[in-house]
Length: 169
Image (cartoon, rainbow, N blue to C red):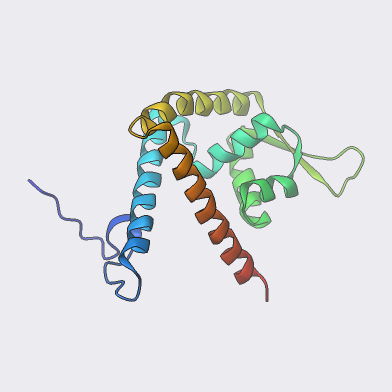
């Protein structure tokens, strides 16, 4: 039996009536949204009751490589606004995953460190990705993977520019 979605925004949250946009552009965002949603479902299933959401996974990954990074630099690396990161870090602190400490030489700078639990969860996320990435990309030839990465980087740069344009008064 075929299940019909009653989501007024159609697949990946895109309104079905986008007659002003070209079909190929809409198809890109539908496919991208589907891939992101499925990736999140995989990670949620794989990580089980760890209750880490995608942004936190990215945060843990960055901290695993740059423990003690400044909160400002972490926000930039994650491409999120400082208040957004601050809320995320409060939640992660409550869960015992990270600790924020003032910089020893400059008290105005806050540094973010992984706790032991955070380090263990970062390793779980890394292991999940190590298993997931080869399976997820298996249908693509190496040159297709390289081209898709190039195109997604180009799309990301365009989206980042539009975010910067909106932030500039």
